Length: 530
Image (tube, rainbow, N blue to C red; front, side, top):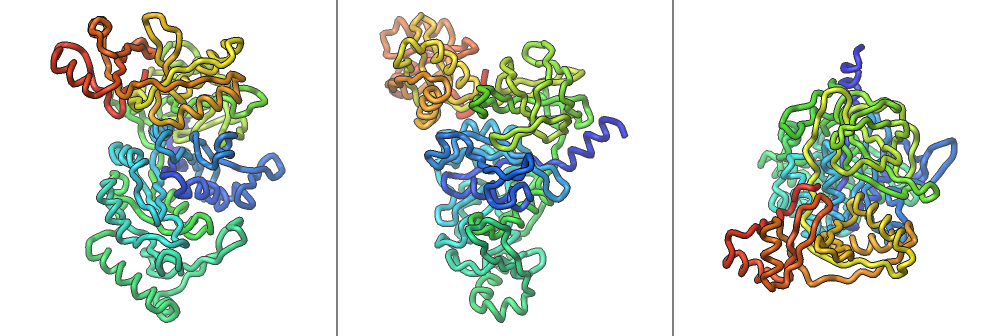
């Protein structure tokens, strides 16, 4: 069998998907339960690897464990039903939506986790809208149904209204939220009951009950569920894989990640419904065939995953061909040869040497300091994939080291954390050396300060500026702005493009009205990264 044929066959065995949610919806719990059901853990949280048991946390960063929130995205690769699953766990907080968006560029599908008590929340609506805009296939999981919550029919209406996806339930709850009796599997019509295990540490046993017996044993709860299903049938809310793959409908499952109820149904749906890797369209609009020589792009960079080694890893999504450790690739932006001697498969903060990988896989390239987010690597014929977008900044702050003797550590950390996309770093082209940090949310500044102190030994003082809006500008307009007397700050990005920072929307409006010839381009919600 040729290398190209092998790549195609192996790609068909891959499933690469992201999990997205608002904070506290249970995303991290669901991630660990997927590992449990796949056999990657013997009990929830304990990883089988290197002959012993160790803790498996998708939230591996110290600050994540201290605060109990997801701050950075994580890759976990495991096998299930003879398939290789690349699970991309993402931060839930809106302040880290930019990191999640980068991860979505590497995913072929997504699972949207909703808390039945809270539904679709505004702070992370942007992430769901991104999936919709990219026509990314989305599976929906209504989580925490073992606790009091909202009516499922109401949640279906909210998903359709706010996100623009038509939910098509595959499983449906029997009993109200907080009195969870099980689910109806619409494919068979059976009731599926789940048995609790101590602390949810082991897979929940399932009992399949035929409809006649379920009606006798569950009474009014079963009657209500069947009436709701009849309503769904009447409006045509049935599973349709074609519209799911087109990003128009969302197969919906109900359960509780904490108790493992419904977790297997969802994981099976990833294998049965989610798409395998397909041809990736390049920047010119041409599709790169799976059988073509190797190509991939960097969608994430992370430093200090192993503090003992002080290293950093570039996460590369394989788009075509066969990756072999040690092969020499071409670095797209520079055109220079790039060695892949130090390549790893990823499991949270843990990694193992990887020898081969195929489309859909994520390869970690260790200490690849010349790589940046969005870079393309390829073998043979050149290919450039579309740049990875970044969100327009909404908050700004100056940054100074508290101890001037730690200036070198400060600059090293500043450069590394910008490369990771933790913050955007802006500089004054007129000579003020104090960097300005730009972010989507306040917590990005907190992560920046925490990591700079913990990982680089440089405590930092952050001082918020009065700026609230940014506009793209050019050299000619920058000169006019400096002479205008307006309280406008002109700064440069790493690629030397210029931004004008404003303290008030009124100032922008006045300048645009008085000087329509000036270049003051609005930054879209997603503007191209350098």
